[in-house]
Length: 204
Image 1 (tube, rainbow, N blue to C red):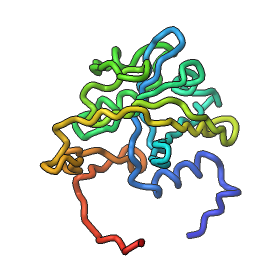
Image 2 (tube, rainbow, N blue to C red):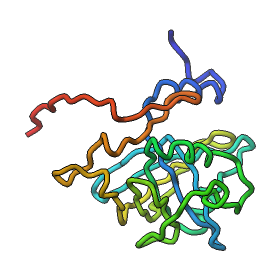
Image 3 (tube, rainbow, N blue to C red):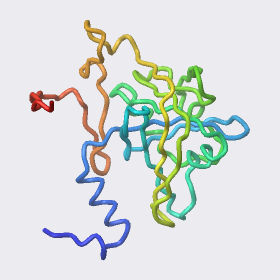
C-alpha cells in the first residue's frame, strides 16, 4: 500500500497517522485562564525535545470548527503549564478530560480530580500523577490553518515532581512502577510495563 498524503483529506491523513505512530505518550496538561480558571486536557502528540535547556512539546490541534482549544487560549493569556504523565490507574480520569466542556469550566472540578499546588507556576498539578513537569511557555508554532491544524507548544521545564512510589532501590524511575499508558489508534491504549532491553552501541 502506498498512500499519497498530498492528495487525501485531512481527516483521513489524521487517521493514518494516529494508527501508525504508536505508542504515543500522553501529556495531561493543566493550564489556567487569565481569571484563574483551571483546564486539564490530554494530548498524545507529545514528547521531550532537548535537555539543553530541558524542554518538552505537545500539540493541541484546532477544534472541528477551526477554533483554538482552551489549552492554547489559556497559554496565550498565562504562559505556564503543568504536564502530568498518565499511569494506568488514572486512565479513566484522563479520558474523561477529553470531553468538550464550556470554556472556563474546570475538568478538575467536573471529574473529581484532586489538584495540588505547583512550586514555580500558577496552574496546579494532578496530585496523583506519578510525574508532573512544571513548565514555562517557550513558544507556540502554528502549522496549517483550520480544523486539525497544529499549535505546537514548547515548554521549558522548570520543576519536576516525581512520586517516591515509582522509584527503584537505585533512586531511578522504575518503568514497571511508573506504569504509564500510551495511545494507540481509535479508543485503544497500551501499558508500558511490557518492556525489553537491547544494549546500545558504543557511541564514543
